[in-house]
Length: 309
Image 1: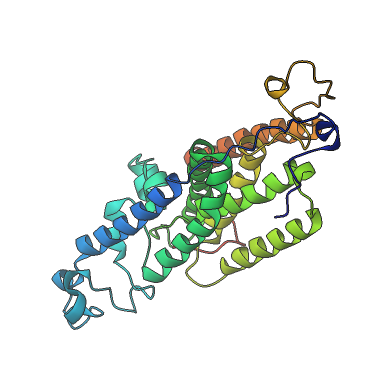
Image 2 (image 1 turned 90 degrees about the vertical axis):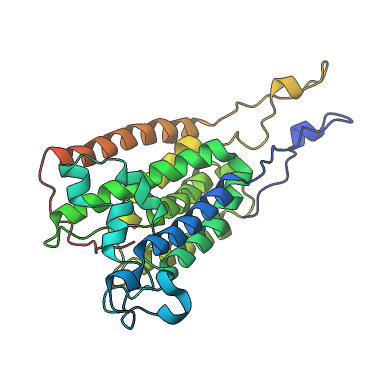
């Protein structure tokens, strides 16, 4: 996205000295998440065993795939398992979370997918977005961002499921977490504004990518509530987890003795403001959603659609 060169005029004034290069992490967590999702989908299809529950002729590609064959199109148009199997493995559902107190479903649903089309689209996005972010910020911050964004998407999705007439609908997929990564990319651009050279081009291109992805949420059978919840959670988490030192900052430990270099503060005031405000908003947002689920009846989220994501 066109970041500035790592040297500022006051640093270059120091003779025969350059600041240390930015730290670069090797991406391993995102590939592990990728493999886990693919492996979980294969296991889901193995456990589903469509021919054992339906007529073999009703299952798609049963002659070639055997127990890995897909449910009929009328039941699952995404080339995948039955709702029954997804529910057993940990899909997000109102009864499981609210009645049976299975809060772990908020996280297990992130590793389940409704079909081949669903898992391929999500995993392509994960590799495209996640590897770059992990290389720049490390696995701890990106791992926390991924899980907390997915949890935020799950909260809003369950509020929507609870409020719909078809309360038995389930929600699965990594879309909430992936939209959290997109939201964090936007807030990272805003909070680290000083290190970008082509600011407007970077902002416009990112907004176009986000807009196109959000537009997908208005297609049939897509849970847009999870997309919006994950995006909002990731956007505010980005101000907290992805804050970088301002352009021109150099830690004192890297400045040789005797060098008279103008020292800059590590972070700008607006970065601290965004960080503190985001922490407050996140705490209030998560608390509000949990209260709506476990205490009060949620309002009608009429602008949202329903499962799976």
